[in-house]
Image (cartoon, rainbow, N blue to C red; front, side, top):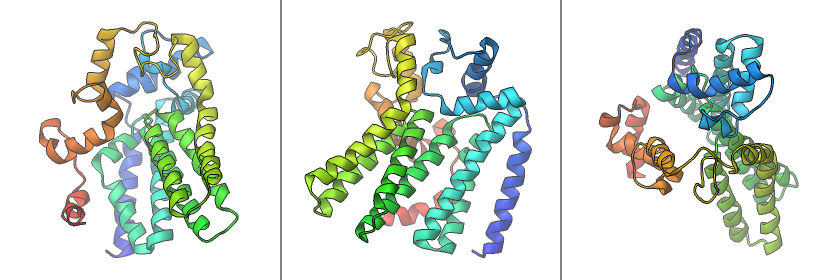
Length: 304
């Protein structure tokens, strides 16, 4: 695909995204969570417990940025902040692909990302999903750089792992599901240590880096949630932590909504795989918008 054609398509998509950002916010999640919580904080001039919005006890890195947007302007500025994270995610994808696979692959990768209907829909809403996407891409990018520099014996390798740990911490601060990426990278650290035949001390040091830094970065959110509700990751891990304003009925409803009705509580932690199930097998029933380029690449993916 000619680079000019890719650039033209991306320019058209970006123009449409900017137009859609200017449309007033009407989505459910934004009105009851992503913008509602910052609005309550602004009204009270402080961060406080909101008993009728259980989501207000999540980690809220993105919502704090939306608070700045609401203070300086309105919901449109908050939407532009989220769009910025979408554009930065695309830039991260482009840089990673260009560094390891070349210019043509980078351009195609960027076009695939911006041709996903759900990604474009989310970009123009004041959600937190693309903050998670951006920090996870950066975490993986830094991790890959760490692997390559370690293999070459360069001394800068540890800095890349430190950066990966920082990005994992920021991702968890946006959404708890950022912990899935962190766990995968932790497994990667163990695998790299065993494969390269490094000592036990080497593996433990790197593991500590990837576990302690994200914990420290999110400790304020965990402490806040524990003070307000008695559960550091409210409302998750119920009933292992006694949680205020939470019971078995609320937990059942919550799990059903978060997993789209797929099985027991453990499925909540496997939600990304449930989304893949929807995309491939149940897209018609759930109304999932499928990326057309993804469909074109699907036969090759199955072959691989």
